[in-house]
Image 1: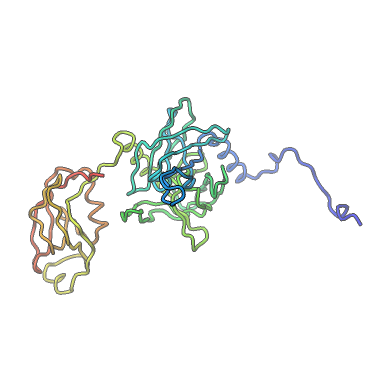
Image 2: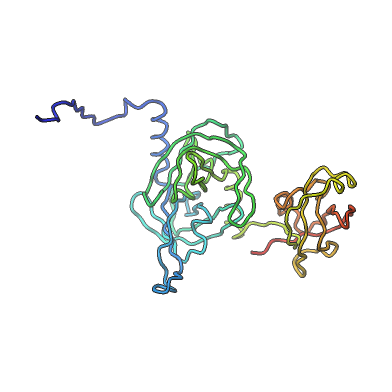
Length: 331
C-alpha cells in the first residue's frame, strides 16, 4: 500500500496572504535588518602545548552595524583577548575587524571594519519600553548564522553582574530564546530598531534571557569610539560590603544596615584619599546613604573626577566626615 496516498499535499509558492499580523511584523523586521547584523569569529593565542603561541579559533558571536562607515557593537566577552577578529555578512562577505574600544563593566565593545556605505541599525530610546511589547533577537547561536527568535519584553530594570564584578543596571529581560553565539546581537522592537544588546542567559532555566538596554549601549559605544574607554571615577581603595550592628546604626542614626568596609588604601594614584584609613566604614557619599560597593560604584561616575567629595565614615564606632578627590580609573 502506498502511504503517500493517505495524505493530501498542497503546494504553496507564496505564503504572504496566509501570514497573520504577528508573523508579518516579524518577517518585516527580519528583512529590514538583514544587511546590518553580522557574524563574528574570534581567534586567540593558544595555551595548548601542541599549538602554543598560535592563533586558534576561540568562539563566535554576533554584532550589528551602528554607522555607515563600519562601527559595530558587540559584547566585550565575545572579543576580549582576541588576536584576530573576522566579521561575516549575510551575503557571504568576510572582512577583518579591529577593536576600537571595550568596556568590561557593561560588557559592551565596539569594532571597526574598513568599509563604507553600510546600512546602520537605528537605536530606540529604551526608556520608552513597555513590558509585553514584541522583542526579536537575531544572531548566530552555536555558529548557526542569522537565526531569528521572537518573544516579548518580560521585565525592565533588571541588574546583571559583569565579569569584572560591577553591576550593570537597567537590563532588559526577554523570553526571546538566546543561546551561545547570540551574544552581541541586537534585540529589536516591532519597528526594527535596537532596544538592547543580547548578552546573557540563565542556563538552568528556559525563557530567562537578558540584554543591555540600548540607551546604555549607545552611551558606552560613543565613549569607546571617542576615547577608546569609558571614563569612571575612583578613590583608590579596596573595599567590601559589611553588616552594621544595631548599636552602630542607632548611635549614628543611620538609614542603612550595611556599609562599605575599607580594607586597603591605594597610594600614589590620580586621586586624593589621605583622610581615609584602613578599617573605615563608608556609609555616606555627599549626603546620600551608601549601603554597598555597588552604591559606591554608581556614585563614582565620571562627573566626580577631580571634584572634592565628602564621605561619611564610621571610625572606631563614631561617624566622622572625610574629604576625598576621585581620580579617573586607569585601565
